[in-house]
Length: 69
Image (cartoon, rainbow, N blue to C red):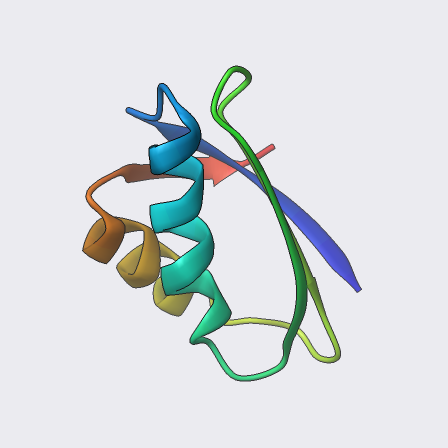
């Protein structure tokens, strides 16, 4: 399954890498696409992810999860 979120505060490739690194630590994640220009984070997973866990991972990377896109 694939879910997209809006993330604020990203502006470059480093931002994309930081978010990808934290999201990749979540169990069940099979793919990640991050676009700093649009603020879009898309996560592919083999089961539904807990949005609170996604929010915590984005926070850990230093950015803010705005909500589902």
